[in-house]
Length: 184
Image (cartoon, rainbow, N blue to C red; front, side, top):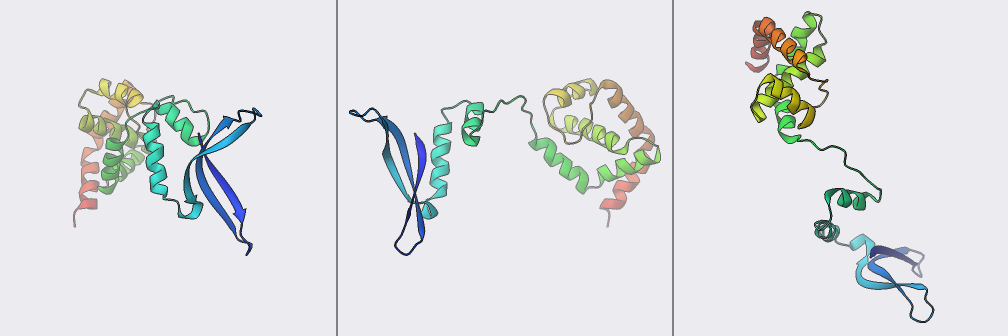
């Protein structure tokens, strides 16, 4: 089955398109394929697009997720990895809104560290504690295998401990910067 679009030109020269659900059958006498119309959706410009989305969603329920993605795109797709993103995304937005990320980057820059990497590692440790409580070692596995954190460098135990050492040394400076960005 497929969605077929047919076009015709009106007497006034305008072009009109119609959408139909069709499938091919072999003609009993000639053996050549012939399109059989199952359903007429009507004019393409007035088709209920939401009804088409519901039809696609209904059909996709019976497919494996990778097959549903491939069918929707028309290409062969292989899902290699899937990770959680929602909780970390929301926490990241809150982190930036409160000025925590900026305070961490400024404090790291004063210590000649890679400010962006240190901030992302600190955020990853905070996100892991907030979303799935565990140790620093568990955080390294969590970031590597289970969650998607934007711009987070490779997180190993050494990087986690280095970030914690940085936090311990820069805590008064970071706290003052966060207070200054949130107090009015």
